Image (cartoon, rainbow, N blue to C red):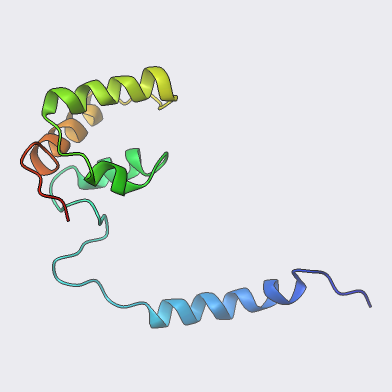
Amino acid sequence: MRKTLFGGAARAAPAFALALAVAAPALAEDEHEFAPLPPGEGAEETFYACQACHSLRTVTNGGYSRRVWDELLDWMVEEQGMPELDPEEREIILTYLAEHVGEDWAGN
């Protein structure tokens, strides 16, 4: 019988996944499922819209005004191939970014 390169790894994957799940630490009180984004209304929408293309650290390195975030969203759609957001979702994300990763953002 011929062994395949990944045969053993494929059989071990379920056990490895279980071990990771058991060993994974619980979230600290100050963390949430959308970290490293700061918690707040709009974090979920921002998480899914942004992490589809780049690291969320790219977002948390921001600290831009609402106007600059708005321009960045336009640039990402026009120049980077980001799907255009539904206007309501865009407003939620833009408000979140301006309020939680705005000009006063100290980072984390």
